[in-house]
Amino acid sequence: MTYMRYEPEDLAVGDYDLEERQALRRVVGLSTELEDITEVEYRQLRLERVVLVGVWAGGTAADAENSLQELKLLAETAGSQVLEGLIQRRDRPDPATYIGSGKAVELRDIVAASGADTVICDGELTPGQLRQLEEVVKVKVIDRTALILDIFAQHAKSREGKAQVELAQLQYLLPRLRGWGGNLSRQVGGRAAGGVGIGGRGPGETKIELDRRRIRERTAKLRRQIKEMSTARQTMRHRRQAREVPGVAIAGYTNAGKSSLLNRLTGAGVLVEDALFATLDPTVRKARTPEGRLFTLADTVGFVRHLPHQLVEAFRSTLEEVADADLILHVVDGSHPDPESQIAAVREVLAEIEGARDIPEIIVVNKADAADPVVLTRLTMKERHSIVVSARTGAGIGELMAMIERELPRLDHEVRMLVPYDRGDLVARAHSEGEVLSLEHTGDGTVLHARVLADLYAELDRVAKPVETV
Image (cartoon, rainbow, N blue to C red; front, side):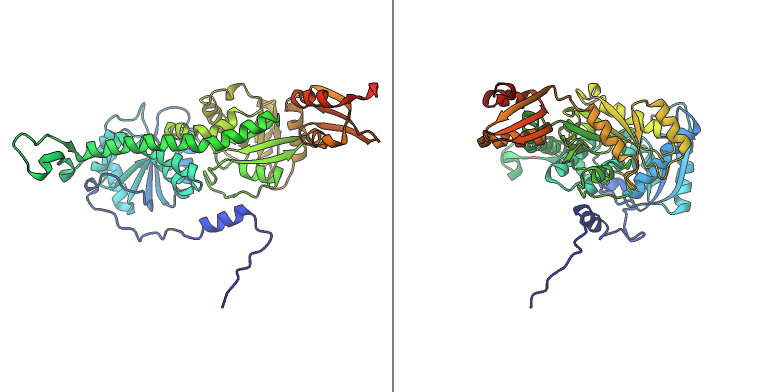
């Protein structure tokens, strides 16, 4: 007997993705961690009960608390339960244990009392800091970079996305490899491996040297694969540019509502979840301005404070969607406690992308339905080229589309031509790429009155006749 599965017709692709992501959840308290953490060289992150630690080295106390709150959201997105959060006031992180030897002992007592199995530090630790802090607290210690990489590894879906995340993980892991006990033994090859001949026993490679060489080889292979996989996106991008279809890129802080805005503007149906870095793979969709002009809208990976440079490098091919856009919609979470710092963090990352600094930008303050009106007023006063919207309710979307239309590259050529009926493709291109003002069908062809870009104008000038000479 054959059973058929029926699905509700109103579910979008993103709904299925969200259902699949929530189908398997961690159960707290069922993991087994090694007692001697120094027995392993590289461990998969199994975050469960964690204690957060931050160093307040500059800025205000509110800034330090907001940073630790963001670390809490990152940890919960990765599947952990946060038990404690600690901030230490220091001029700079301790070069040995990040928080100092005395505070490390206090942290060990807190970890033991709370039953935590992981400590997460709000910063990127050096290999020495990581090792020495673990020796003191006697549980697994990871830093902010490793946490973000773990979230990316969980959420990557496409082949290119998985390769980009793996490349970033290997770049992070390479300087942090450790060898303990038997792992320092030599790997001897050649005739010496078979016990042949005096003098045939070279020193060989230690286990850690062998691992480093394998990581470098795998990294080189991943770079080649990513370069090959990015060719398809480049081909589509060049095709859009050849047809002079303007491009708009959505950029912004993670969880600011970029995917929700894309769905609202285009009906794309991509995954939407109230979590950090919910979507990683770029999505490109067609959209039209109120006057009917075609443009593309590209959703990109979200940014965050101190985004690991390994991720910026690994996702460079994806971030090229921003560099090649004609306009950037910079989405900001208006309900966040400190939206100005989010804007600064995104612009810091955009500055690392070649060519992105010179692209026109619209600040789109999202989540107006949940934001404080005072904060919205402050943002719009500070960012003059901005607009307040709500992707959930649709408020302000019409004004945003009108603003996009004004900012897109201008249609420089206004034509009034008689197009032969056998070249209806040119009329179709005028509809899709330009702005058609009027159409009139005559016995000899179609009288087209439109505003078009230079490429289509040259084609029309070659095959059509000006109306005045007919």
